[in-house]
Image (cartoon, rainbow, N blue to C red):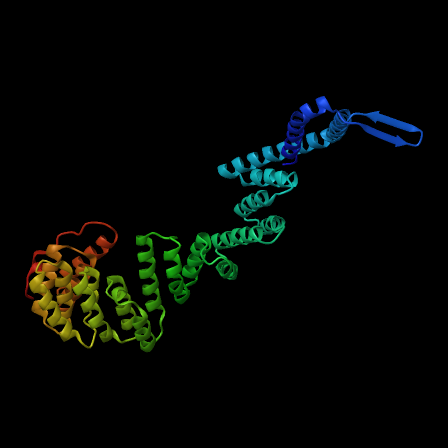
Length: 402
């Protein structure tokens, strides 16, 4: 900047001299300097030229005087750059020790070393050296404003990566208060809330995540569903369950995973009948085999109502294995052994499953058919281990007990 100014000044003087040259040719002017016994008499042009030459000489002497300092500084900067490059390459290769050593050297040779110390902190953190990591972060935090923000963001990211969520949370909350639309802060804060199980806070953060485009539509949809499911699973009373359900958007209540979470929690609170209308509405919106099986719980107080509803669905879905299994379990709960056996056999014919074999095995065991019951239990175990089922004894496939 200074060099450019001097060049512009010199150019301006030359242009001024060229413009005034014709005037000086006809009238060069007259300058008389009298100092004590000394008298100097010359023209204006000669005096101006003398001043210019003198100024250039002063600049030359000053430049020559500073040359060693400039050369030393450039050499220092080159050494710092080489160490920085060496450190970053080692960091990329995963050689944390070499990276930390080189980056620390580069920082000591560089005046503005925030980036150097942040990289060194990453190398130290990768070696599980929190004391050295904090030292480098403190060195990087040489001022307020943007530098302080970057240092705290780096600290929070490393704490979160190491599982120190409780320590990272207040740092991230403070950063969010300062920069509410910062994508990286929003992403880390949402992750911290999620890992800590702070579902109310995460739910309140979802609009900001959407506006900042931190997540794409599919990721945001999945996070919303996970938040709703986890919130429903975390309640401890039927009243809290109902309150949490009412807070959910109507569209979210129709999600199969959300309805199933509600049903699981209601069952755990011994209020399984609360889930019947919830599951019915969700299945009407989108059919789900796992939710149908949840609906076919024979231990509920409204099992007869569920049995009738499943029979209605069967008219529309006669080849649905999960629906046949749900009907089989509900019929067994009502001691309708023949119908239970028929539905369970049909379920296994359509699509064998470990749950189907286990339920059929319990039915056979109840009816005293121990050999085929054991065969069913073995098949349930085989399928849980990823192995195909073995053929059942011929008698087991009968639709009525012997």
